[in-house]
Image (cartoon, rainbow, N blue to C red; front, side, top):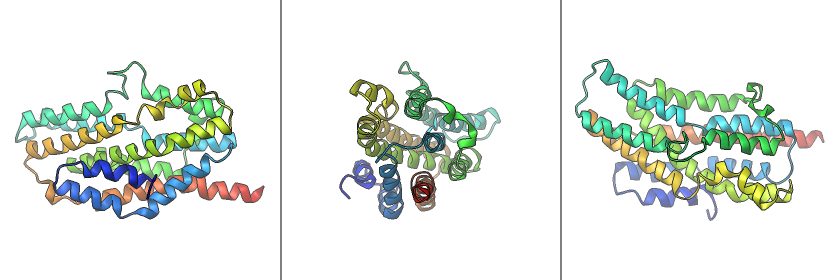
Length: 275
């Protein structure tokens, strides 16, 4: 498991205080090595050689739909304040405020609240530098598997009547994303240097979106998501122990793996066979 997504994610989960949520997270993220294998192999295949610009357009447009979640997190906050706006009973309004405070800390950097550059602009620069232009923005490049992933995640976060599902999905997303960016950064650095001839300075500039999320950034986001979840249980007098993460984590990983399978493995192998 050395150097794998699980090897990056599981030590962070082990740092969580002993609890039902820790036990569930460790178990669920340990149970699906096949999904992690598909994701890892997808990124390795993508970065082993120069890619056709059209394939890159499909990759970056579709991949962006599985990553950029600041709007979704903000939307969860909107849903919670709507409870107050509509006069719905909240057991502890101070605790609900702490939920919102924790959720906002997840998206400070994304929205350039604490830093000067929108993360969406960083992603734009990365994809455009690698593709060669910004035609990757066209929705014609959205693969159905990526749309399915985003539709499922948005339903959990913004449509499911149980707000706990939104918070548990956010928790899953933040810890997975930590693993993904840490895993892919060395792959992308080597790819741009050896296959595209980027200078060290150009690599740092182009891959800023990935590198800014490594280290403590996504780990902190995960712990903010955990804090939001814990405060919500106090605000609404619900128990985390009544919830299982099995379906959320398994579905998240399965749908993410499907995106990498289609964009980097299955379709890529078909193209190679044609050549």
